[in-house]
Length: 316
Image (cartoon, rainbow, N blue to C red):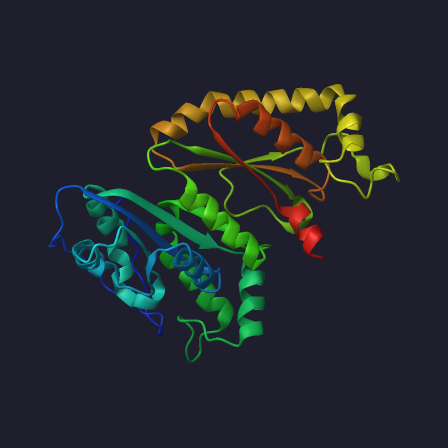
């Protein structure tokens, strides 16, 4: 994976040369430090994530050229800092190509290195830039915002698979802060975290999903006027689903599939596996099934549950 470095582009759209990473660093062979690297699309929430980490006591550096990561960590180690967070993205230009190699090098030295990649749908990014009136770092004369976003996605495509991906499209800032809190509270070396995430297809498939299961074929409580305003958490909806044999069969089929392939993802040294369960609105079927799957796996592995459409509904 470290050899799959993307060729970044500058503000004019010209491809820039790849950079070799620098291995010179004043660090012992093994350092008891935690380094959280953050990258992602411009407008995806990196500033919010960094502020959340700063509030949690991390030494934060924004917009660092990737080639300087070893030197920074050496300096922070000498100064006695144990927890650090660094944002590396296209603003640093061509040095973004050095990030995979730097990560591979630093993993040999730093006890706990984690990587978060923040993403969002194009329409969300365009809306955020329009609201803030900020300029996209790859935008320039003759380059539209849509073209700049597309170019940035191309630059970051290989980097996006290096760690834990979070889709912030429908997230409020407080929700993203909570996700970052969950991420940093996971203990190093405790293994993979399994996240079950319900969503509504009418809002789009989550960009951070590793597996997607479509449960729209199941009976829908939406057509019962009494159950329509409720969610998959409510006892009346739970009782409704427990009378449907095909719902129980769907839960068991998904559980068996995830259980069968979970060891392969664990051998791949994944920190997170996100399983997305989708129904039409993300209110009843997907919520119920995600909750049942969480119960099925909780005794065996660290489990998180997230319900995108329910949060969206509460925020409305």
